[in-house]
Image (cartoon, rainbow, N blue to C red; front, side, top):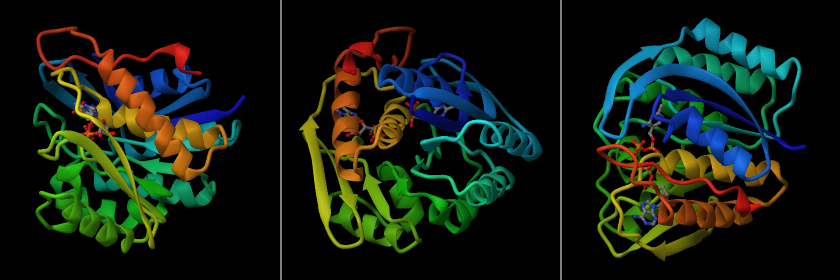
Length: 261
Ligand SMILES: Nc1ncnc2c1ncn2[C@@H]1O[C@H](COP(=O)(O)OP(=O)(O)O)[C@@H](O)[C@H]1O
Ligand SMILES: Cc1ncc(COP(=O)(O)OP(=O)(O)O)c(N)n1
C-alpha cells in the first residue's frame, strides 16, 4: 500500500489541518500518517486557541515515522513558527523525503494567524526550497512575493517569483480571486498549466486548501505525474466542495467520499 504523511496542525472540528489530510488520504486509498505541529481549538466559526508542539517533539515524531515506515509523499501544512520550520527543513534533507507538497498556511479563513508573521522569512528561506510543490492561495502568494494579485497575469508573475525561491513546481490557487471561475495555475519554470472549474456557490469551504494539497500528495504517492496529480486533486476538491456539509454555525467543511477511488 502507498503511504502519505501529513505534517500539520490539528483542527478539533475536523474540517482542516491533520484531520482533513487524513480523511483525504483515506478516501484516495493511501495509508495516512501524521506529525502534529500545533493543536488548535477550532470550529466552523473560528479558532479559539492555539498551542504549539515543541520543535524537539516535531522532530521526534518525524524520526519515529522515517526510522520505520517510508512515506511515498509528504504534505506540509500549518508549521506555526521559525523553530518548527527549521526542524522540518532539516528532516526533509536528512530523510531525503520525496514528493513534498507544501501548503503555505498563514491565516485561517476566520482570520487567525496559524504562522507567526516573523516566521515568513524562514518559510521562504528554508521550507520553500526543500519542497517539491508549493500551493499558496492568493493572499499567501501576495505575502511571499510582496505584490498585489488581481488577475491571472498577476498569478503568473507571482508563480515566477516563488519558483525563483528554489522550488520545482508552484501552484497558485485562485479560489479567492474575484472572478466567476476558480482557476489554479501550475508553473514548472518554463510553462504554465491551468486547472479551471466553475465557482460553486457555497459558504462551506472550511479546509479547501488542506484537502487540495493532501489530494495532490496522495496522487503523487500513487505514482501519478505532477500534472495528473493536480488534475485529479482538482476533481477531488471540486466534488468535496459540491458535497460540502452545513455543519456548525459558520463555514462548514468539505466532504470526503470513499467512492473516489
Ligand atoms: N467556491 C469554490 N468553488 C470551486 N472551487 C473552489 C471554491 N473555492 C475554492 N476552490 C478551489 O479549492 C482549492 C483550494 O483553494 P483556495 O480556497 O484558494 O485555498 P485556501 O483554502 O488555501 O484558501 C482550489 O483548487 C480552488 O480553486
Ligand atoms: C490546523 C489548521 N490548519 C490549516 C488551516 C487552514 O485551512 P485552509 O484549508 O487553508 O482554510 P480554512 O480552514 O482557513 O478555511 C486551519 N484552519 N487549521
